[in-house]
Image 1 (cartoon, helix red, strand yellow):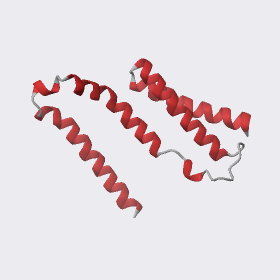
Image 2: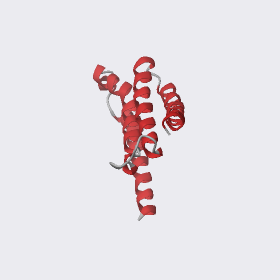
Image 3: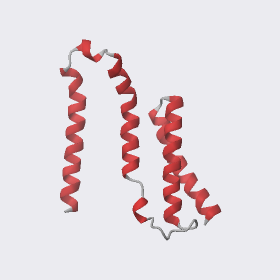
Image 4: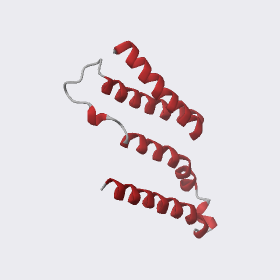
Length: 119
């Protein structure tokens, strides 16, 4: 079951990537220069990144009996804090790579902070 899901997910991502890369060649140039399409092009990478992060949050391991010193809660708080920081940095810089680097550093730094001071 897991391997077939992985193969299907990989093929679906490849198909979506191929379609989105080939679509601009098929669309008339006049339509590609519209302002709404430029705004969509600017916000799409961040939207995809946020969706990927939201789907990978580790809230499944957090139950109602979790205390402030549990590792599962520290990881969830670090993930949410890093996501907020990524959104803020992207809003300021409009640089996806910078936002991703800040996000990776933030999730590790926040997890260390929470584990050190709350655990």
